[in-house]
Length: 312
Image (cartoon, rainbow, N blue to C red; front, side, top):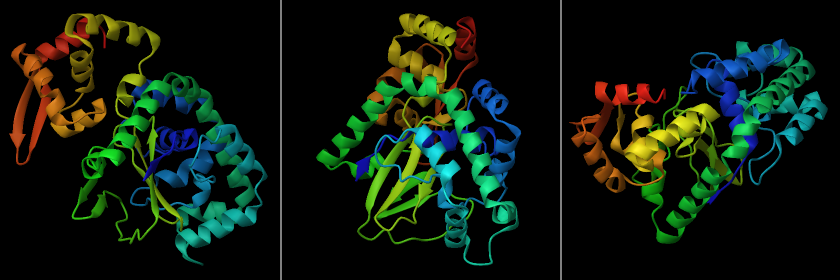
C-alpha cells in the first residue's frame, strides 16, 4: 500500500460534484463558484459523469495514473493534444465494443470535441480550487503520515475503515458503495490511497489498472478547509472558546454523523475523541445516540446557536 497526492483527482471529484451533478457534500458556496467558472463546452463534456444510475467512465477522465504530484496543467495539455483514438480505446475498454451507453455517444461521435471540452472544464475548475489546494498542504502531509504509520504498525484494517462511510473492510474484502456494483479480485496489485479535497461522501475508485488499484477519498478535516478567510478567522475565535479539537468537532456536525466518521474526519480513532465529545455533551452542545453498532452524534439547538454566534 502507498499514498499519493494528486491534484488532478481532486479536480475530478469537485467537477463531478459541482458540474456533473453527482452531489457528494461539496459546500454550496464552492459549488456555485465552480459552476460559475466552467465554460459551456465544459458543462457539455462533463454531463456524462453525472447521469443517474451510472458510475463507470473511461480512464481518460483521469488520463495520468495518480502516482506522484502530477500538475493539473500537465493533464489539461495532455487532454488537448491526445489523439481521439485514445479516447475511443478507453471507451471500448470501459464499456466493451458497441455497448457504449447513450450518455457517452456524443464522445464517440465527436471525440476531439469532447476531449477539448473536458480539458476546458478541468482547467476552469482548477482555477477555483488551486488556492484551496495550496492551503491544504499540511492536511495532506498529515494524511501521508497517518497512512504510513498504519502501514508500519500493522493497522491497515482500522485505516481502511476510516476512509469513508462508503468503504467497509471486512473478511479480507473491501466493500465500496457504488451505483453499478460488481466484484473484482485485486490479486497482488498495489493499493494506492489518494486523499482529495472533496465533499465528505466523495469516493472514486479505479480497478482497471493491471499494476495497481487506487481509491480516492476526502482527506480528514477537508470540511474545515473549505472555509473562506473570514470563516477561518471566526473558526479561530470559536477555538479560543472551546479549544481546537472541540471547535472542529462541533463545526463538523452540520448533520448527524457517526463517531467513527467523525473520528475519520479528525484523522484519528473514535476513542481519541470520546473525551472531547463528553465535554461537548456536558455543555449541551451535542447529543449521542446508539443505533445498532454505531453511536450517532448530533448538534443540539444550543450548539447551532453557538455556531451562529460565530457565523459558522
